[in-house]
Amino acid sequence: MNHPIGDASIDDASAVAEATATAVDPAESRQRFIARAIEQEVIWFLEQDESAAYAESSQDEEAVVLLFWSDRADAKRARKTQFKEYEVAEISLLEFIFKWLSGMAEDEVLVGANWTVGAPAGVELEAEQLQDDLLEAMGEEMRAAYYDALQSALDPADQPDDEPSAV
Image (spheres, helix red, strand yellow):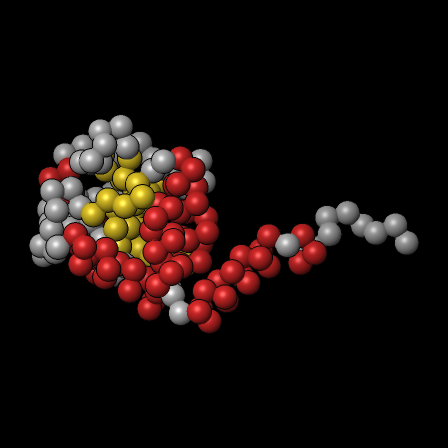
């Protein structure tokens, strides 16, 4: 698994929905998540003992939904209301797109984007679709910079040698 999921969860999806202050249309919340994430280049989540807050899916009873917010204030509100034992944490958009969402897609874990009162259990998105939507919504220059950063991280020529050279 490429993302942390702990043992703590909220079983009652309606209790999680109450964790935020205002009702928002799911499509609007999704668009806001994408726009704010790109603008700030950071995603907020709740963490406890290296595990991210999650809930059960209202769409698929076997699915897990990791909860993320595009605004720190919304994550803090959710923490205050339902996740008191958790701390607000941030992750770079680059890591979110290429590490978290990739791992979540592989593990078939859903994204709870800007989990709000606007839907019975929040906005649930397929990780791979959100990854595509975020990359598509970026400007061409930003997208190229993200792909370059990913390539640099993956390119063995850019990594230091672990073994001494035989000179």
